[in-house]
Length: 190
Image 1 (cartoon, rainbow, N blue to C red):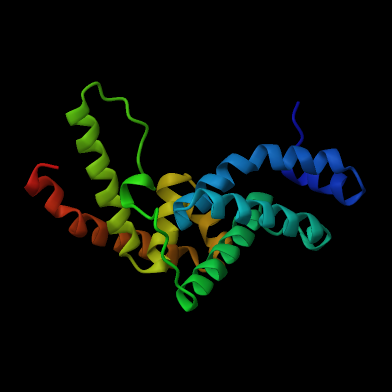
Image 2: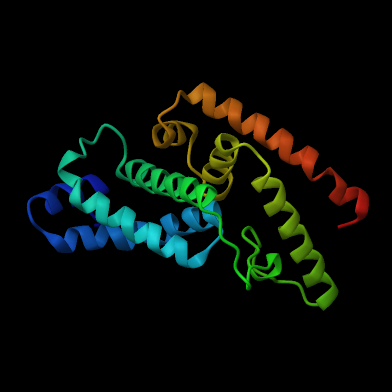
């Protein structure tokens, strides 16, 4: 029987490093996916995830169990993502290799048979990515956590340190804005 996150935290605090390795193994894929969707860059996502786990490890004795370990970890990663975006906005850079096609953030795996269908799916993914990027940060965060990572409203409220009613409102408003922004897709047949 697998140990709970809280049990692994308690073992880690007592000095069992392998218990923290179990936590990393349990959460690294999900955390990476969240950070990648948030930032849109594989290398930055790897760096942020590594930093989030390092911070979690070094501050584990401060984890009081008032929320789930995963919520606490997501909150650490989210704060790192926000800091990264603030630094980017104050020091913008442009890469020669920066092409939308090379980085479809929310693209689903291509299971279509024909090149035309694959192209259509890629256009849809880019449209969703652009629409999500155009949303206010607070709405985008909630949509990513709820729709892509399946967190419950209560968990999202813990991660964002905001009331559950605010989370629901942000999700509703964000999905409505997303639907409006993507309305042209059906009209254009994309």
